[in-house]
Amino acid sequence: MEEKKLDINSLIGFVLIFGILIFMFYQNQPTAEELEAQKAEQEKVEAAVKKEEETPKHETKIVKKTLNTADSTALAGYKNQVGAFGFTKVSDKITTLENQVLHLQIANQGGQIVQAKMKEFVTYDSIPVFLIKDGNANFALNFVTSDNRTLSTSDLFFEPSLTQNEGVQVLSMKAKVSENQFLEYRYEMKPEEYLVDFTIRSQGLNGIFNDGRPITLEWDLKGIRHNKSVNYENRYTRLTYNHDGGKISKLSDSSDSDEESEVDVKWLSYRQHFFSSILAADDPFETVELRSKNLVEEESKDTKFTKEYSAQASLDLKGGELSENMHWYYGPTDAKVLDDYKDLGLVESIPFGWGIFGWINRYVFTPFYAFLSSFLPYGIAIIIMTIVVRLALSPVTYKSYLSQAKMKVLKPEITEINDKYKDNAMKKQQETMKLYNKAGVSPMSGCVPALLQLPIFYALFMFFPTSFELRQKSFLWAEDLSSYDTIFNLPFAIPFYGDHVSLFPILASIAIFFYMTLTTGQTMQMQQQPGMPNMKFIMYLSPLMMLFFFNNYASGLSLYYFISNLITIFIMLAIKNYILDENKIHAQIQENKKKPKKENKFQRKMREMMEQAEAQKKTGGRR
Image: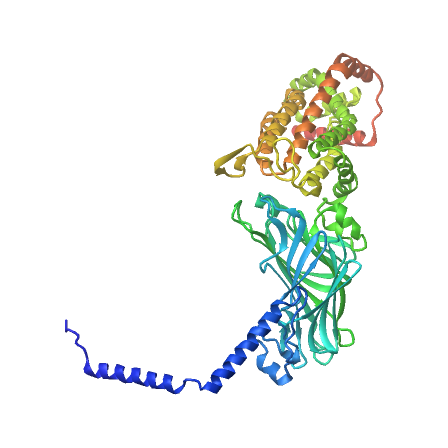
């Protein structure tokens, strides 16, 4: 390899470059006059900074220069350099609106809410509940100008003006072209309310807006995690909206929903389980494009967001100007709070359940539990409510057990029929139905009571996970009745079960096992017919499913099922040992069999169909 030596020409070149730099530095030294001018300018800047620091909290210093049309053309498209059509640029500062329950921060840039904090609530790890923070939300109007230029208010700077009268705070945010030409966002916050009135209007901009192109309202938000189990929280985190004159619809809670186009939308709710961000309009949005993206893939303590919501609504100009009256709601998804805004119907955003189930949940269980918990500990209130519900359903339980007892009494005769006609299924069915008819027993009578209880069970299933009254309320070892209880943390995660052991689901599973042992014992004795479900398998499967399914559910729900099954067991034992007498039931059935029994239309029709089928079978056999 050739050895590198110092090149004399390179050395001379370096010396010359260094000399030139020294000469330029010497030549460009400021004169005494220039030094004096720089010193004066520096003092001026320092004085301005000092004055700005001394500016009151809600006062914003305005840059006096207004950009003209030529300047705006040069600066259009540059974020933070908003000069389109002469909109005034102001300093990028924050204005605070605050009452006893809600803390909002509104930025000059975009004029939008950049922080929304609940003052009375904290997350599972004792951090204040934020619905908006660190850029997780964006609100903007996108419009086309008369020269076909597209602008967004997120790039405009708004000049704030805050006033207060008798506790009502009014913040006017104006993106100005001049004193008489501006786009205004107006926020009005009342004491102790989560609802903030929000008005958008323009003045003197009819020559700037393109009348042929609608203005698009854009609202995006990523739901911030607040609960211990992100999967459980995400199950009740959904985009809900009121449209078409009062219809309530939801986007998917588990998968992505894109390009959902709706008309006449009254309000949009970005629900985050126990808290909601809602935008409501006095005049419904004519068309809205809705999107929801699921951000939760698995249970993880590191997951920060649940879902990503997006909505785009079209706003129409009126006489070339913009005028819209709306409302922001940042607060708890609590029926007691949302009921205060009946004219907007915001309480419908709570997932009470559909149909009669939701009606029972909203108008029976929600107010009843609110009444009990007003003077009882929250866990005791659940127990008392469970006792009342079970006692109210005890007549249905009695009917169900009576039907089982009658079927038990008839078991020897049914066995005799099965043995006699074991080779003729049709005849066996006919004789069995004759026996039921004579004895006055219906095999369906045990199913009807169970069906009558379904609305109650489903309504309670929806009540406990969504009841704000239960949030962060403790009972015994459960720290939060709206979340799972933990008696032991596992060093690993079991699929479909989790990384912890909850005690209330274990107790509920044990109770449901004994309940099913009691109720299915007779059924298993009678159930030997082909095609019937294996009741013994169901008896073991149901408690196991309960154990796995409810390990991550609200402990209040598991507490309810535990107490409910215990009470039901006691009621059925009391019916069996002290109310019903199987000997009397048998004697009554024998008396019924002696009496002539009139067939109803359904029984007669079924008998005739079976006889025709039997006759056709015999005819076919002779052929």
